[in-house]
Length: 314
Ligand SMILES: C[S@@+](CC[C@H](N)C(=O)[O-])C[C@H]1O[C@@H](n2cnc3c(N)ncnc32)[C@H](O)[C@@H]1O
Image (cartoon, rainbow, N blue to C red; front, top):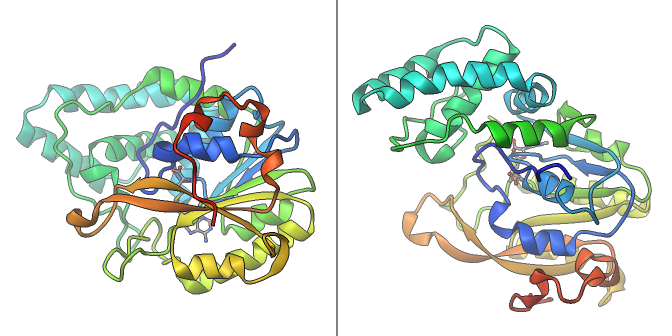
């Protein structure tokens, strides 16, 4: 069997930390997979690594055009990408701290020559910038400062090659979440991980693209989830555990304790908060439209995920 694939980028809100409880709740199914808010793609790679869940086909989407180009280049041109990254990594890793900063800012200010170059620059900046953040100014220019890591893994060949294998034959699109959701068919699984509803007024990190993901967007997303549910598509959505989001998915009557959606949660650690002292354990909300009996963990009651402290079902 091929080596399992993993995310190759650091991504704000990345689900690597809580992948196990999410995968345990994924539906056992044989249809296709759709991920409209791809980011670092932890769920997609997690599913492809699980023989019981590996999807028959997949559509991956994000609104961040450069991020989407990176995935397409990993899928289509991974060896040229590796060569280009090697050319960026070697001088950076051999340089003094001051020279590294100069190399970083030179690369940050540079216009990429082609798609492979764009992808290599994106990965280089992702691994060497402050906290792996992605932030652009009003003109769409990446503006995160240098990160000063001692030994950043700029080029991780096995991870890139495994990701390329997992992405083979996968459709990767750039646009708003509604488009790939419309394409989902009965029996498919759609995982939604939108920019989260801020936990406090100050922790409003939603800056993946220049447009913010506000409450109006969260409501628009809920309507799109309603549409998928009516069409027999299995949906899982994760978000921060906020009253507004819980209320949104609790509002309609249906089969799960009188509600249309099943609402669960799992402890998570938020790495991105504008106040460092507020980093720590918070709950991640998990909303599903299929019964517990269809979850992956119901396949094997002795799986590692069932040894965890029980999730709180609301
Ligand atoms: C919380 S992150 C997803 C993280 C991902 N699950 C992971 O494990 O890394 C949300 C993503 O949604 C994307 N996004 C923001 N607004 C969007 C929209 N309207 N449609 C599609 N994608 C959007 C952002 O670019 C960002 O990559």
